[in-house]
Amino acid sequence: MARLWKAPFLDLDDLMLDLYQAQETAEAISSARQIYKNEGLAGFQLWEQKAANQAQELMKKEPGILALGGGTIENLQAMKDLETVGTFVYLEEEASVLFQRIMAGGLPAFLTSESPWEDFQKLFTKRTAAMKAAAKITVPVMGKTLEEALTLFTSIFKEN
Image (cartoon, rainbow, N blue to C red; front, top):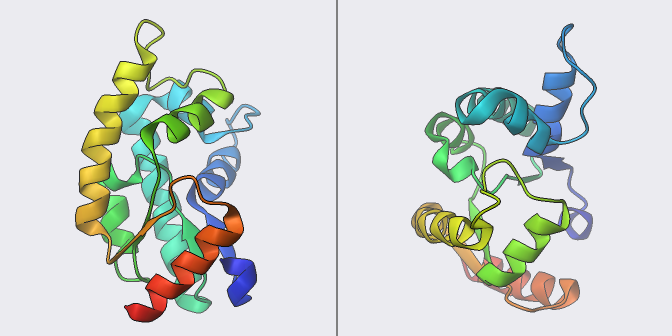
């Protein structure tokens, strides 16, 4: 979408990773998942909130596209910081597809090794309801190619 609109693209997880690594005491890490593993949920959400605040400032200067993490919807302060900078769009996808994407990077700390699919389904149900409630626009991208999803998004966005 950012390329199509020739707009800047930001990823909240990347911003959070940059902020985390900028600490003098930070160990070398390569993903937001490692922040979660190191800091736990509460610590992770504090870093996510810092990243949301930074994204808010950047987006005020130059509007663009911001990708959120899957759990950002549960971080009330981060969502509050971001609500003033644009339109929240929910890209709806099948649970099984999202689970495969998550597991491709290995078992994340927020899922148990005993029942990762069941844990994921609970999160998916809770987060999907929250995302649909918060979104001004929902784009059902289920199984679509990137080109098909962009066409659908553009069509729905113009309607709204």
